[in-house]
Image (cartoon, rainbow, N blue to C red; front, top):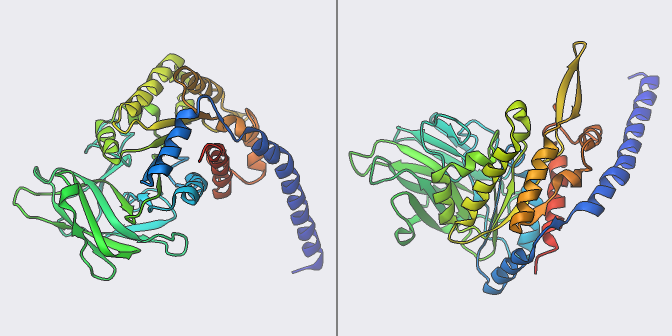
Amino acid sequence: MPIIWKIKNSISIFLICLLTIAMSSTVLGQRISLNDSLSGFTQALEDRFLLKKQLNSELFVLHLGDSHIQPGGMTIPLSEALHSVYGDAGYGLAFPYQVAKTNGHDGYQTKSNVAWEVSKIIHAKKEFPVGICGYTIHSKDVNAKITWEFDSLSYDDQVQRIEIFHGNVLDSNYQYQIVSEFGEYAKPLRHLSDACHSVFAFEKPTFVFDLLHEQQFAFQKSSTIYGVKVSNGQPGAIISAIGVNGATYNHYAESVTFRNQLEMLKPDVVVVSLGTNEAFQFGDFDDTTFFDQSLNLVQMLSSLESQPIIVLTTPPAVSKVQYKNKKSYFTPNPLVPRVRAVIMDIGQRLNIPIYDLYTYMGGEDSMKNWAQLGMTDKKRIHFSPKGYQILGEGMRNAIDNHLP
């Protein structure tokens, strides 16, 4: 390599590092120090956190959202904070995203020996009902197998208890068996199971297990799987991230199966991170309609028997691409402030705490700064893994202030 090129390349890298440090210490540093807090009424959240600590029972937190939440990275900092206070009860919801041919969490991988049909909560015409994970997979092959493999390097707790949300075994759905990497068959916990929900437990914990099918009756013809929850059987916190690419408030609010399965999980806290996809409806967006749809989801969550504490987050300051003279450029998405205003209004009316992610980022034109730091994708809608980590740390800091 020529010496002159080496010198120029070194200078370029040095300047980029200086720029990154400068912007991190001003834009990002000021943003984190000033805006990582919850607004609104937080006493109920503090009371629930304290109660669960006193009872030493499972604290179940669901982070519900769209494509920003589906990879799971934004939820990791909050998981770490809650585990440090309550202990770690396990991974939580672990949908076979790779089997459904979509992006999933980094903490585990799934694979199958057959191709599965897929339904998604955003589909207008769904082949199958969609439940707790926002996706459904379906197969008629009784020999179909799904393997879950958790990353033992990044995930400390092994799996000892598994809950499957599935189609009705008294109708046409197969029954299930769970086998560990050691060849151990998990014991069915029939007193905790029902026709649409099967619970199993291993004697010896594992990082890898297979889900198998069993046809006990001739009328059982297929398998419909809505989601799987894994835990270690110990008291502590479980924090699950459920996000669906393209999802809106209305998609979740309208799903009866999602609501009924969420009821079975008995969530203590539900963090709702939606609104980005509504901000891309443009000519179809209506503030009053969005208010009603958002309110419907909040009311649905409030109707759960566990009476979870709801925390709303505003959407990030995503960009919109514009074209001029056959060239593209980015401008702040003009609907995001309107979406944010509706969410803030609902929070204030109903005394729901809000994590204002939009303000935390730096406001209207902040996506440009994040992009210059390499924290976003090329479309300036999504974030890099580091970007999601920073967003998640802000939410962690906001909620951490209210832990016992």
